[in-house]
Picture 1 (cartoon, rainbow, N blue to C red):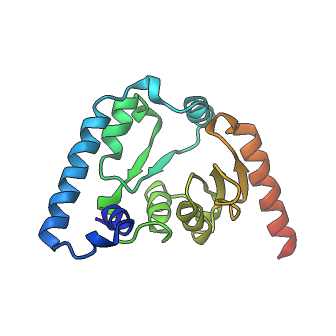
Picture 2: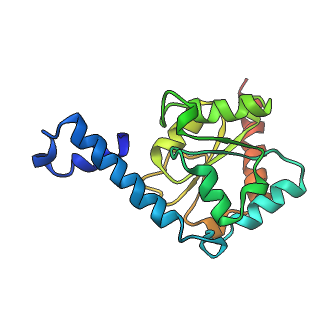
Length: 180
């Protein structure tokens, strides 16, 4: 419903829709989304993502996915990536969406990892804000103007390099320790 509300705001003439009309539109939007998801497969994995996930697993690190979609597990299954993840937090498990940190803190809590020991990767300003609010290291993927609050920023998923991310995380952690 939140995403539908954002879409409806783009056309002021739609602001007077009844709750029933909005529910019908949200259901139709979800039906179309699920039809689209059914067409994806491993060829739709963004460049660099599987290599990053594999590098994390090779190092024995826990990986969680925090998604605003209730269909996150289905999408991962379609992409052939489910086996990389130790835990999945979707919209049905949290009461507050991003930029609230609940999605990320729920994942860390489930994995038993202290928040400052976590690294979150996001492509939205709200997601980066949520990671930062959780006191985690934030990696932004996308436009610098939109993601300027990220602790580390790359333009595209193909630039997500495990060793570089860990190095940036360690550098920032060392700086925080010297500030205290």
